[in-house]
Image (cartoon, rainbow, N blue to C red; front, side):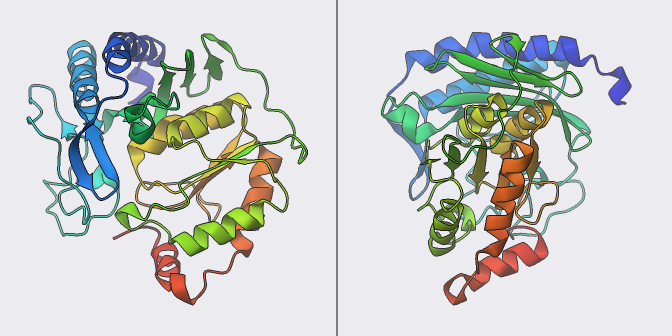
Length: 318
């Protein structure tokens, strides 16, 4: 039960694990691709090393399973394989925590734990591989489908965003400032990848139309290349809002909690709570979120992107 979870102690453990892994992260900046997961998507040896290190520490100190981008779900006592799971491009090897599967699975295969850690060892790997500092480590704790705590560590920017459900947002260990009000003249909006179609995400034409539409209210748009940093900066008030397209739990769980814990709003493009498998997350200060959602919902899907409408109708990617 949630009442039995000491989230204060668990957050301290998560931060200690991140502290340990940060040296591994920082030592290998500029690492070359080690594993090609799909065209345009890869993992470096640092991704694999950081995830293995976080798994070892988190399971050792909490006894809870860990679900990560590179190795899927590994329960206490199990050892990750030498190579990451090959989920791309059809995802027929992904487990239930990644959202709808391409292939049917049995109940036992899709038996997700009630409480587990979620880890993205390096969010923004393409940035990391060339020395761009917009890359981060993401750790969150899920309980019955709800994030209870999260850590977004940005080693190359020297910043940490952490949150605990019901206890607010911390920026470098101090209470975060309130989210600034919407101001079209200065408010910056982060926007997800405009070109990537990895994992069947929403088509390029639809994203570009959305970018142009949002720019009518907020012309100061930014593309960082890191979903984790987009959401963390939105939670901290650096960005007024963000629009992202990742359907992955490991990309979004930490940032959604962070935004909500500082009074922001995070939903899918239909205005419903985001869930794994849905390509479309909009988050921000309440007024900014409402404006972004209005713009997003006004963008016609169009003939070229008819499959995107089908994705939205059934609530996710299959």
